[in-house]
Amino acid sequence: MSLPRIAIDAMGGDHGVRVMIEGAALARRRHDRFKFLLVGDEEQIKQALDNHPNMRGASEILHAPETVSGDEKPTQALRRARKTSMGLAIDAVKKGEAGAAVSGGNTGALMAMAKLSLRTMPGIDRPALAALMPTLGETDMVMLDLGANTDCDARNLVQFAIMGAAYSRIATGLAAPRVALLNIGTEEIKGTEALREASEQLRQADRKLAFSFGGFIEADKINRGAVDVVVTDGFSGNIALKAVEGAARFVTDLLKSAFQSSIRSKVGFLVSRPATELLKHHLDPNNHNGAVFLGLNGVVVKSHGSANAKGVANAVAVTARMLEEDLTDRITADLARGTGEGPGASGQAA
Image (cartoon, rainbow, N blue to C red):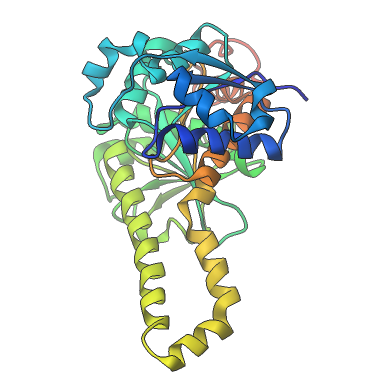
């Protein structure tokens, strides 16, 4: 099956062109139907492509004279959007020259450019940043918002729940994902007014929605596998994400230190190495790389800035999956079913 080509912001990410191209090449070796529009400094991209002959016939280069820096304010980046690799990658999606865009660059700038260029879908007030996270269950968990919106009202949270469930159905194959709102307790009286109101609205609409709403969940339970989608505002979501990532690094570093502390510990490491390697694989953020901006008229995926080639390849794979499964169409249908908003609201939802 052929796919629309994916625009790659080749200059984004901490490691720049080399890793972005290497990641795209790795993704193409896994799935040779991928085609790319590589956006950035033409000479640097050509040099990087010399090491990846499998990319030559599947790629076109779009020269961009400027790059968005990691510490640049979104307002500053917006003014230079038409000259930057990030802005031109998103513009290619708007013009239909690419089906989706992937960038490892400045998250705030990427969100601002994507929202201004692609606009939000009908029925969605604000886009949200969603990503897959590992759990103790059989499938990964979707969490949103992870930083796009610091302040959210009940209406925003309900829309996030609908979008997150649509993403979960594509990413995990679950027919009716279990959705919960992140809160400081599970009792209905806990949390902000926005959380309590969103919970009431989701309970009332539960039978209309393509997911099962389970109320509130606390932060220490989000990776246990009890829910499939965790919904929160971008402020709390970003803090929770960084806390989980930090805890994962702490555990792996602690184990490494413990196994090197004595001869006996080193012997123990050799015995338990299969288990520790499995743990390392499970906690490696590169294996879950690729956060999706949900709610836009187009697919934009944020790769972690520090991602290696394997991580970039996974972000590309996430992007392709969203294209294959028509993410925006699914969200539109779910909105019509659950809230009565969106283009399909007056008719029967798909």
